[in-house]
Length: 108
Length: 115
Image (tube, rainbow over all chains, first blue to last red; front, side):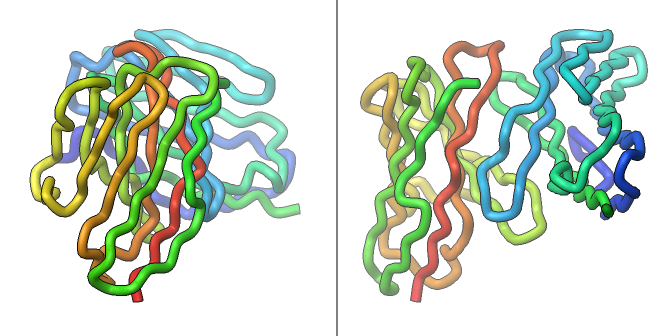
């Protein structure tokens, strides 16, 4: 079993839709969680950084952590074509452990 | 967010030569830097973790003599691909972090093509 599982997609939604991206993990010791956005042929860009359980909101993005279920989510409201990218979840535990990444396409 | 600069962004080299990639944290001191490799449509594969002033810790299966990592200062780490072969062609990305439980920021990546 991988330490971090993420559905690779692709996920295709119409512009304006609410997008839900998810990851599950196996190690209950993980406490720091991150979401990155990666455009093709570019380095990942940090979107959200959260600690422990709960929600964190930044503009159209909301990160949610449920440690009891070992489940993290990233919600994107009012999705835009410019949100089309690969989204990677990551756990910070000395080193960064990444999910496989979910490819999102927002259609105009 | 903090800025991590990676150079060069693209490099083409002949088989058998060595290539050096630089990773700099521009506005913070990076006690730890990570080097990743990414194949098309795949996630990042951690190659090694380097702490300033210490030898890098390599992941299983990564040849330390082939991928030389130096982290001589708190703002610079280098990855040298020695005796490059076409199978080393890939997208290499560095990441830098100030402290253990803080965010990590990525460079722009380097696309290496070995011909």
